[in-house]
Image 1 (cartoon, rainbow, N blue to C red):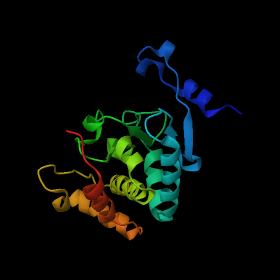
Image 2: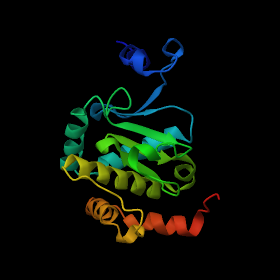
Image 3: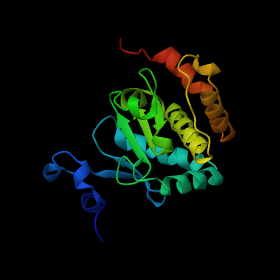
Image 4: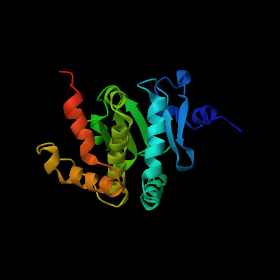
Length: 196
């Protein structure tokens, strides 16, 4: 049976990759392989810890919501696909993904490309307690549910987060799943200092 790394190399579209002859597919950490949830090992942040927390969070999401997301991810148009499959899950140490999902600095994560890409800011993910990382993951999965339900979440950066309908609706969804959307915000306010 071919390894995932070998499969990734075979499936990689060479015309879309700069210096394709030197392209090296990353190793992947399994999160939930049956749902095509894999985390590329870019060695940005504690990817093993994050993969385990993601797996545990995924198990806490109700089965109907998980099925809705998986069905949405499996019908990803090729022009929206950023990796070898949908969804793309990434730990990042910069904000280059802001053009993909409308996020700007001082956000912990993002859900973009129609719910097919999930991004998480590694420095804060590594610093947060496990519970709050799970809440962050649940919040971004709630945005994926919004997309999968036909809603097109549009974050309004002109409003405080607590008045933004897209964000409060995602908070309501994750709260229904049994996650506390406000505990993470409280922890950040007390323990995290954003670099200038």
